[in-house]
Length: 112
Image (cartoon, rainbow, N blue to C red):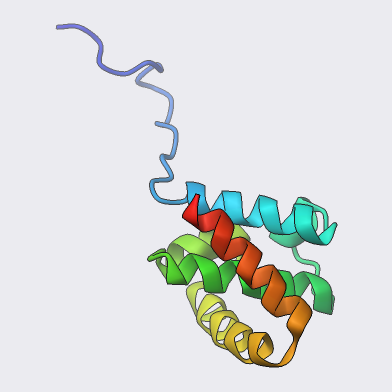
């Protein structure tokens, strides 16, 4: 019988991240647009610009059908933080034109 796996059996299989490519792409684009290092966006930095940028990524990813668990995994957060961040993003979008522009640009990125 031929070997179906491209890695030795004694090694753990690589983790396949189905459905997370869009979230990674949104995070990278948000980092590019805001000038925030991607490592900060995915890490534990909690300044307002970084947190708000994360919120924008969370909102657009949720609008595109990604689960809170998927989003949280990519952004290094738990699902309840993603729920809270998405809700907060809606509030901020209504009151901050710069944030609304970031969200609009991320929505455009999500469309392809």
